[in-house]
Length: 377
Image 1 (cartoon, helix red, strand yellow):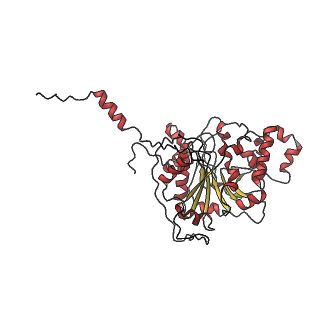
Image 2 (tube, one colour):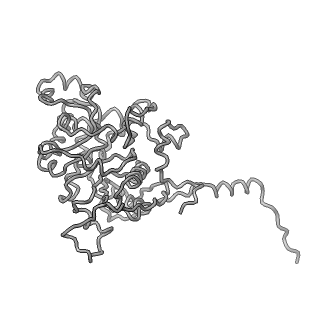
Image 3 (tube, one colour):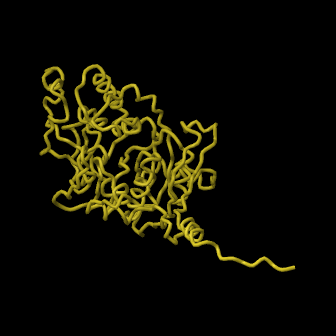
């Protein structure tokens, strides 16, 4: 019997096969657990695969984490959370997590660890409103050694208080989660550094976390202030023309501060019930429009003029460009410890579109996205 002669595959078939081999190797994590009370969706995905970050170790001068209430023989707690979460030596960092900004969050986490002298002493508190299992898996795969805990933020708590702003992205309920940190994070945590997901640190976060808040119990947070900004522009003419409202800032010297980088005393926050004070302003906003810009103005109304000022190096903000056109911005004069892409444009979006701003090149080295041409495991 004559054998069937072998034929070469058509050139087009060869080309298509090569294209398939070069497609990005994306990992789609699917959450199908209907019993997951921390997830609002049961079929969400993160259409990316992220590389595993290197592990970072403490320098010899770092404090030893101790907790008198922790049993060293108890290995049931993930990452020994109980040992770290209530320790006085732990540096606590809080961030929100969602599938939209997860790529930025991963870069921010990496930058914090890479520039820390005591990375093993850092504990991350992640706040999410959906897809908790999915986000937990994603973080754990890239940072298998990371000490962290996820907390569920119920969107319904704040959704009825949100008024439309100048940019729809600012109306996401998760943007308001920073107002509820004191309710979500365990009572034993006394101080936390809150960070947005669109930033990177190039300095040791321990320096920021050690900011002195003074003896005044009414001083709850610290942040870089910008007193040369036009503070009146953050509120409407309706606000300023109403004496009972504009007198809010009487006996205060209010300055703009960006809520994407804050050091918060949670003990003082809880004692002063500042979450309720913020909610009261949001309720008023629903009745009469007194501001235009999302979650920032309520913070300004409650805290502006009564915070500890931090050096501007800790929030070189506005690198995302203006809120309407996303134009490129330059750094502010002076040294840099933290770069913040607040504003419309995000560095990963512009890099993917091959239309980066010059400063986006400073974010790129912290990007953990697994590319189709990467040979990293």
